Length: 615
Ligand SMILES: [Zn+2]
Image 1 (tube, rainbow, N blue to C red):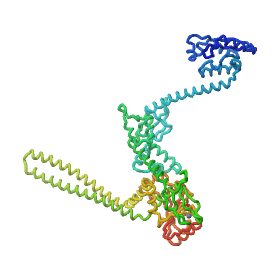
Image 2: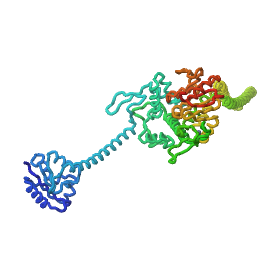
Image 3: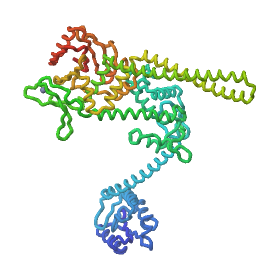
Image 4: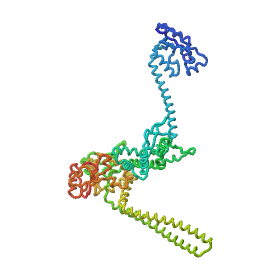
């Protein structure tokens, strides 16, 4: 049987228990328990306390001997007066602890046997904190290293459109430009900055790709349009932070990119991994600005739409009362409702405000898409276009008359050459003539420019008569979403709505010649993507509506379906059907159809029905 090591040390922390007293207690304990024992004692030296915690072994030869005896299996038990104060350094305590455990050493502290686990758990806890601290230090060092790498132009991504991996040098992946992809990136920037929407860019460049892939590509191109690295430069970590703030609308401009430090740009460096200058920094900034603008507008539109705009418009067909906006006490549920009498058959009793307001936006949007009576817009635009043509004609006339004067002056100078022999006068005249000719040339150029401008205006006036109309309609729609407040929206809706009734969940909006039918159980919304497409489409009508060419074209007898909305079909799987009411027979068929749904509505005067839900 192995021996019990009695370990004693001086420390002022052992309540003044002297080494001798400690040893005496240890021996007493061993005798009482029938243990053989050996005493290990580290006597204190002057200054010992200071050294203690720096290296507990250096000034404790006895303790070192004890450990080696444990390893040699001479000792399998130890007795100490106060175990926890073997050292104050937890990691060393832990090391000691591990050694004891490894060699299955039983530890006695005065009279009691220590259950090693509890203590070691506590120490482990402390140690793990130490490691955590060290790990953070290392991480901070690594982040510093990473930052240094990025700030020297070595920013890299695992995959970047426009580049392909071309092996590895000793430390980094080497990227090489892919010419075809670079062309696409250039095309994207040029077209986006010229007002083409991202969808249209993607479709143009990737015509053969299937629909789901196009959706992915939309995101890819959105990223391309924000990727600074295509300028051939790389943002520093600080620069990237500021750009993010700009994206999140936290700062208002990218002007910080112009800042310099030591004669060099402060926030970007030449890129080592992606050196190709595919676009300029200016174009990149313009593209960022455009994307941000879209985001901002959409956010404002959503906020503005979230207020009371349908009050006094929706009528209950059962009791004839109008719906108004209402909140619950905690302002959490905002809804439209009306004063219900016992007789009123209306169900549901209320409708979420946000949902109805969103529907109002959809109605307003599509109302103008199917709008047919565009003569008013046309007249207005003709006037404006004519004014422009008249202005250019005026300017042209002025320049031409100026030219006639110049020509006359030049002709008059000829007589000087004929009549005079005065060299100085001739010299002067030559100078004068040269000056006049320069002016004449400039004017002639001006005439050509104005003439071409005029012919352009004429051509536009003829060719784009329709387009101009579209422009006006477009402005009306855009102002609804971007400029109008709740009350103005309400007025804009009232201007085009003749009557709006809610039959249970079916909302009928009558605009005089057209009837729009929605089901308020369904969700209607104009997506950001669709809205941006509309904004940048040149000819939005043919763009947004498609004629015929879908399954089941005649669900209502002989009523002709004029159009379905192309985009809404794609967005939500919903089809908008427009039915033309050509004769009383068509009206009757549709009225019967509505009756089945318990909608009792007189379709007199209606020329077309636009359904946003299946009837
Ligand atoms: Zn009612």
